[in-house]
Length: 217
Image 1: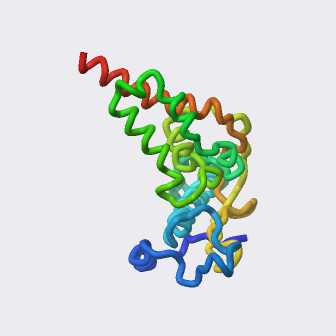
Image 2: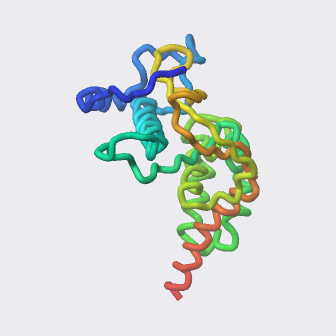
């Protein structure tokens, strides 16, 4: 299991923040591809995630102690944040859209709306801008954003786990690991319906285009 960042103080976070614009100094993708886990872009991502998960875990443990004989002077939380995440398995269901799909998804405003034209152009050019093929890119951040908006109909399977983020240097750095004893309880979308997701995600742009079009007329 990975360590929990419960002992990381403000100075330590500040030190890591200074290094947040560079990847881990010991990371060499050509030599150690297994060491870069969890989808983090910068070294600080794993540490920030660990702080969040461990804080929620502590809250959940404190909440579980309410009414179990502790002195009344001890204050326990009334509730804890609910942790809802997208699993990597579910995000693998959400492959990036092709130019033909983008064309279909932006209709009926592809030609009349500057917003839709810009959105389509953005998604058409993601692979070339990242110097990758479309098969290497998924709707990672977008799926989290849609979940954060409370629109989770595209999730077809949910799982509940107790997890922690590993900060142990090595092959599991940055990974989310099962930790039934000390982990934070989370609810994860474990299977996604790509058709439903795309309709929900692109509907927001179509709605904005319709509003702008109505204002202009």
